[in-house]
Each structure stands twice: as structure tokens, then as C-alpha cells.
Image 1 (cartoon, helix red, strand yellow):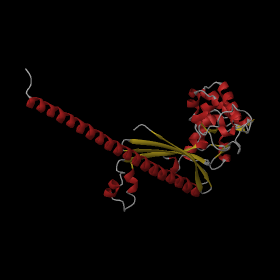
Image 2 (cartoon, helix red, strand yellow):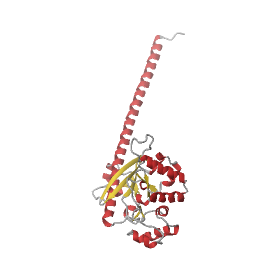
Image 3 (cartoon, helix red, strand yellow):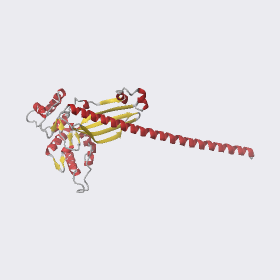
Image 4 (tube, one colour):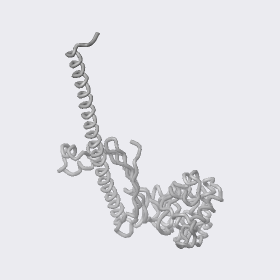
Length: 316
């Protein structure tokens, strides 16, 4: 049976209407997706900029704490304000110290969901890798310290040999050897020198890499570092140092020497009771975004300068 002409026309019109609706829905969905994407990109960029400004402010605050600490004391120890970690707290609790900041102002700036935490670490509480090699010359006193540390941590001596060789090669003049490794900036980059990742992980809490040679601060060093840094020191002596400084920090190296036997060697080249280099760690949680920042701060007199900063995304 042949369809009537008016029936064919009505079917064609219905098909055209369905195609039109499909096209309109497709274009509308594409437009909505583009708008959503633009909003998400703008929100992410705003969160990134806010995070950068807040963490920069936190770093400035940390530098101010270190400067004020220097005004009041010539020594650095673990009972000072800089050594107290900042537990995670809502940013508005800091802004509330200013009476001009209201809860409404806090909401308008988008910081009501911002949480800040962090700490300052004395990097001279660790053995400094920069002490090991001066140019291409190995410092025997520093090598002895690292030999004791590797022995305590159960690390193979050949890994120490690899570390020393890598540091020597990295400091060779440019062009003298095409195969020289890059000089690491942080402990995490020691794998560039040929160390195994497992070795780097074990060493990380006990060593640092500073831009210059610096002694170990006996007011802040842990037991493992004390045993490695002080020739002739045994576990009883290291525990004694830690126990005494918890009650009263050492004001001079003579205070440390008075605790120990004459066989234990304390000297100003390898040991100190004050520090110049600190690591500032900051963690900002802003909504669903978490940003981690580490900075190396050098304090010289009443000035605190940032040597380097690195920032990364963290787990929420």
C-alpha cells in the first residue's frame, strides 16, 4: 500500500524536527562543557595564585621568627619558638588577630577553607655533605664522620665511596670531563651521583647539603648524628648530651666538653651551638587543593634570605 503524500510529508517534518532537536542539544551540551571547563580552569588558577601568596606570607613569617630569635640569643636549641611545629589550623585564626578582619571579610577573600601547617628544621642538626669534599680534595675529618654514620645506619661502605667520588666529579671544572654528574641541590637528588634510592631514603633524616661548609649544632643534633659527628663519643655520652640539653641548652662548646671524658674530641671546626641554615616546610590545604613547599633559609646576623624554594602538590 503506497503512503499518501501528506503522510510522507509529515514523516519528513518529524525527522527534520528530531534532527534539529539533536543538533541543538549537542551544541548546548558543548557550550555548557566549554563553560564548565573555563570555570574549572579559572578556579584552579585562582587557587594556585592564592596558595602561592599564602605560602609566601608563611615563609616571610618564618624568616621573621628566625630573625627575632637571633636578637634574643646567640645559640639555637630545640626549646626556642622556631622549633615548635605549627599544627594544621584554619587561616582565619591568624587573620582574627587583626581586629579589622571580620568573618564576612574572611569569606569574601576565599580563605574560610584554607588550612596552614608547617615547621622549621635546623639543617645544621645533620651532617653536611658539603663538608666532605673541598673542590676535588676529600676532607678526612668529615669522611670519618660519614664513615661512622654509614656504619651506624648499616649502609655498605661502597655506597659512601660512590658518594665521595660523585661529589668530587660534580665539582670538577666544566669541560674537563663530559661524563661529570650534575651537582645535587638537595638530599633527594643524591641519586644523580649513583647512590641507590634505598640508601638515599635511609640517609635523608641525618644528612643535608648546604651551599657551604658548616659544623653540626650539638644543641639540636639527634643521637645518630651526635655519634657520627663527635669522635670518641659512645651511646651513653650521646644520651647524656640529649638529656642535659633538654633541661638547659649548651651556651658554648666548653659546656659540652665538661660533660664528657677527655677522650671525646669537641672542636669548633666540626661542632657548634648555633646555626645559620634552616629548612622551612609549609603545607596549605585550600578546599580540595593541597600544596607543599620547602625552602632553604640562610640567616646571617639579623638578615634571613631564601636560598631556594620548591613547591609540589600533596595528598589532600
